[in-house]
Every structure is written in C-alpha cells, then in structure tokens.
Length: 116
View 1 (cartoon, rainbow, N blue to C red):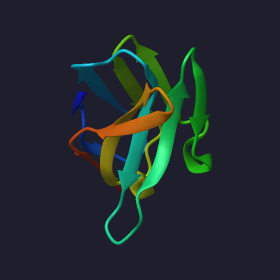
View 2 (tube, rainbow, N blue to C red; view 1 turned 180 degrees about the horizontal axis):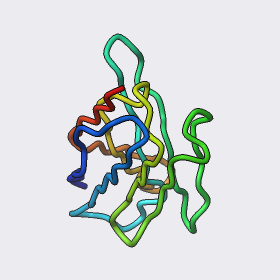
View 3 (cartoon, rainbow, N blue to C red; view 1 turned 120 degrees about the vertical axis):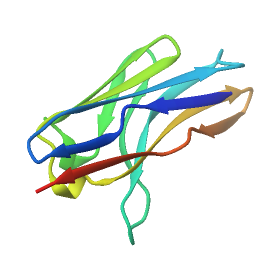
C-alpha cells in the first residue's frame, strides 16, 4: 500500500486547511485510515481516524474543529478554526488486515503551519 498526502501549508490562526491522502496498491482490507501529527520536540499523536463503516475518533483538542471523512481509498481531514498549537507535520496512515495481523502503512508527512 502506498499513501500520497497533500494539502498542507501556511494559514493564519482561525483559518482552515484540508488534507487529503489517497491509498494505492493493495487497498482491499484497509479497515482504518487516519492522521497522526508530530510537532517539534513532541511525540507523534493521533489526530483522527475513521474506522469502516464510518465510525470516527478524534484527539480531544481537535474535537469540534476537525472532521475526518473517507471516500473509498481517500481519507480527508478538514481542519477549521486552526490554532498555532496545531502546527505540526501531519502523517496519514492506513491499517490493512491480513488474516490475524494488521499492517500499518504511512504516507509522507505534510507540513501544517498556523501563524498567530
């Protein structure tokens, strides 16, 4: 599975950005797709994930501001009311089941910078 992310950039505080990530290759049995982020000097944290058939989970600080959605092999993250603390490199991921095991695949990071 290969993941291609897009949509990062620089935005003012209170602004919006939309991240997209498309999976290709052996995409059948991908059960979970989502996003992590990593800010400088901090550990990578899960931002949001969507579990087939559409149950979403969010990190507490983004609830009500971010919305994750999935359309076939593409996962989107609509980010509204962005804050400087949302600044990070965002990584998409996909969990693919193979029998009893789950393989996690990662996309390249995309930088999100929110200026105050």
